[in-house]
Amino acid sequence: MDLILASASPRRRELFAHLGLLFRVVVADIDETPHPGEQPVPYTLRLAEAKARAVLALHPAATVLGADTTVTVDGTLLGKPIDEQDAARMLQMLRGRAHQVTTGVAIVSASQARVQAETTTVWMSGITDTEIAAYIATGDPMDKAGAYGIQGHAMRWIPRIDGEYSNVVGLPVAAVHTMLQQFST
Image (cartoon, rainbow, N blue to C red; front, side):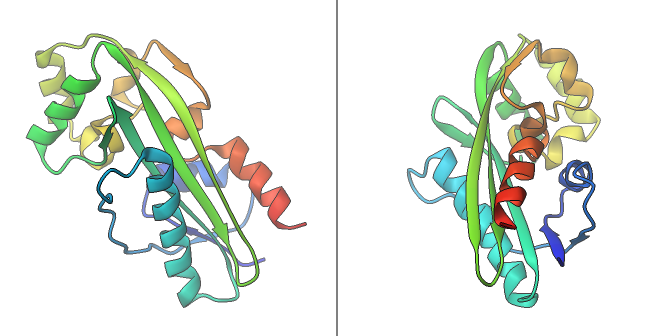
């Protein structure tokens, strides 16, 4: 099987590699703007499938996995920050409370498609504005939904999660494993 990961994320690539499969990476360029009132699950599923189908159009004999992750707090979707001020705004919204991380996954080929979303609840401690500024200065938040990476410096502010850890990093590995098993049957 010619397996392609349609993602520019190095974290997603690393997680996908844990499945022990041979794959290559082809980055999909799609518009990731949420539709008005779009909820996290439909939004991430739409983007995951759009990424997978964009790459499938270029490689029609392949099986393509696309994924997209978003953070939601108080019904507000938080994607990747556009600048440092946006990162600070997001982290201030998340501090001292729970939020949801949703990853949509789509696996498509010329003859099949499977889509699924996983949601993990994450609690962030009450970090200070000084801690937020220092974290932003590392550059780590700038390419991550919700402006933080649970696997990096921000893990010290995450006392609890309910759900799959790898989902928060960017790919629900156990769910993807099951989807791939179902896909090949």
